Image 1 (spheres, rainbow, N blue to C red):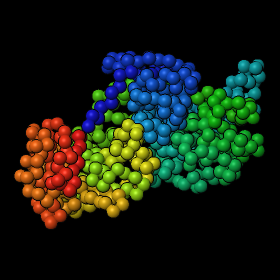
Image 2 (image 1 turned 90 degrees about the vertical axis):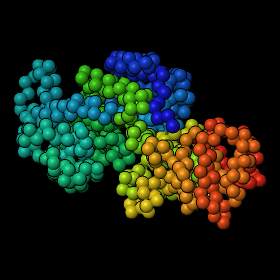
Image 3 (image 1 turned 120 degrees about the horizontal axis):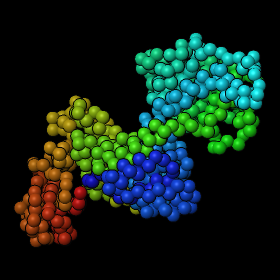
Image 4 (image 1 turned 135 degrees about the horizontal axis):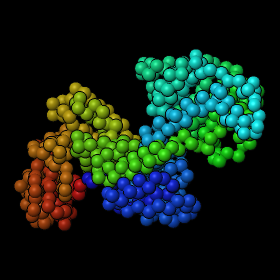
Length: 529
């Protein structure tokens, strides 16, 4: 299986540092920069490219993705990817990646600057001076020292904001469903639930993606639970705050001020918000520093190069299994999973709604392998059914659409013959099979079928012929020679049972006439892996 992506031609559709194109071109990738394309123009252009690099302006919709014929990867030079339809990309088998750390410092510094500006009314005082006034009393500020800053989202940005504002003497509290109280305490943040945060926060800043649980999380109900005069900031994504609710809270004085860098609609047109005297506005500047733009442009280009070279998929958001497939230690296991899935389908028949598959891993070394082996097995199983190009990105999506159900199980105390092995149990109606395999060196091998053990390794690579028979091996081999199997690389079989034995051959080229074995075999399948 080829793990590297073939990236020959990349489109950059948003304005960014020329360093992005320079890095790609230096690594033999053709780059074309076409900014401000309409949706229709992008749909017309996208079939010509293997990769697409965007910032926030280009909307990579399902229509755009589905129009692509060669697209393998979409890269966002920045963190947020809400302008990319990730489910549509996943179904198409297209990798979506971002640069998770490239604009962290810029976003952090912008957040901290806005906190200071809120506390001291800096923009309002500046404009008053420009207008010739001297309004010292009107713009009386408050100290940050001793105030409580609530940070929703304790990832890279949230943690760095905490560190900087702690130097002002602020108390930092926070919430993140993926961060424990113990971990938060390590960077001096007291972990609280959001319900406990609202009543005690003097300032609230959000550093989370825009997803269903975060959309509108600051609303009439949550603002009503806050301290009167609470001040709020958003340098993350528009829509995390209910803008109408925020205006109501500002008008009533429940919210003492807001600093907003992002909006539901950009540029914003809600004048009740943009013209409010207690609101500080910036036009989505969180990542707009020279340093951040150079950094994210270089990083996304280098990530494309690494993906093209099969080195890594750092920053990929929808390709865990493929990321594992690039690791030298796990690549043979991924190949094993795909081969077992393809072989299982050839035995039980093409997958359909009633097909079920169980993936079992054995031994301590494979404790976490089920996370990516599931996608590998499913990619092998759905290949014969789907008209789409199947890979490790879209296999789980396509399997779900077909109705193929997959479950994983790990058995730590494995039988000696299955230590560090993988079993695939496939069932379609009344037909079922259990295939077990492992990795020898770097080669995936088939060890057992339905409990019958092969006497030698059945390497799952190249052109294979698998059959079940009650005839003696010599008889079958004689028939195979007559069918054109004159170049056999390897042969092995299971011990005979009353219901027959399994035979395996690895051939130099596919058998031209496998049907000639029908008289001696009860089952025959030919695969090329």
